Amino acid sequence: MQRNYDVVIIGGAMIGSAIAWWTARNPAFSGRILVVERDPTYQWASTTHTNSCIRQQFGSEINVRISQFGVEFIRNFASYMDDPTAPAIRLHDFGYLYLADTPAFAQVLRDNAAMQARLGAATRILTPDEIAAEYPFYTLDGILLGSHGARDEGYFDGGTIFDWLRRKARAMGVTYHHGEVTGITRAGRRVTGITLADGSTISAGIIVNAAGPRAATTAAMAGLALPVEPRRRFTFVFDAARPLPRDLPLTIDPSGVHMRSDGRYYMAGCPPDDGDPAAPFDDFRMDHDIWETKVWPALAARVPAFEQVKLLNSWTGHYAYNTLDQNAVLGPHPEVGNFLFANGFSGHGLQQSPAVGRGLAELICTGAYQTLDLSPLGYLRIATNTPLQERAVI
Image (cartoon, rainbow, N blue to C red; front, side, top):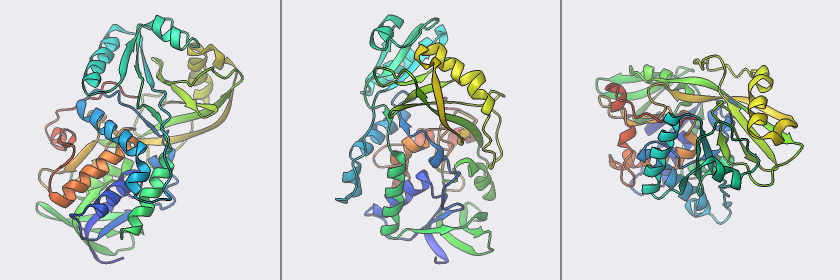
């Protein structure tokens, strides 16, 4: 490790590694990159606990376009790696199915579908009868309509993508350092370097905050505010005594429980049932009662075949939750131009990492977005309290 770098990225999980890889491969970049990661095992990183899904059904145009590039990246992963040994990544695109049980949410889904279709997504609005004809295993009492993505939505092997991005970044000269950032030095309208827990200091031309659920703490070291906090999310993997005759779309139930196929098994998830408060960084407690009291009853009520299931595994992960609007915060601070945010993904980080890594690399290398303008997700909306609200949150 050197004592000065052109770019210092705080956080080496999926977002940080995507930014490092895209920057190192950019022909306009010839500097040095340091990634500082407090836990190189990534045992507690959001990347490790993700359900590894991607969707087109967002409520804003910028998020749809980000996902469209994400699908392109997944489907052409080996080509992007430029390595004959790189694997093909399969997208299991059985789609997301949002179920609406109120007129208000039904209208949100209709409005979103119209925008998504205009951008080329394959979203379709289905009546209960149409849902039942294609997916006869649902009970649809009280459901007014569904919104289903017929293409380019589902799950993929995000772990393999993460491993390859990290490996390729190192091969192109990116330094990964096991350490914890405890301070950021700032001189007026610029940040100048970082301090590590061992007392060492490193100067930096640009600092990128990719600290996941710790993003607000990292921003505060530079004297900057960021409305991002850790929030627990529970995941359950289960087997069914009566497997369904076809893949289960990632179904977002009005109960707050979501479920999907996971190979030969099934996966479900939900937030806590206590108001969804912020959690301490090290709070990965599982609510073991919530499976019996909420998740399984919701599964069995919506899919009667799930009345007989066996719970195989469960874990708790953290969303880096943007309390303003549940959308990412990307790009420079308006008053500290060499401090870049890549934070607050609120559960969308893995699927958005290809476009975010590319976009932040373009900012670093050329000073502007080149391929996709990510400025609608910039910090200005935080400073002016003008949210870009995501209306279909999972």
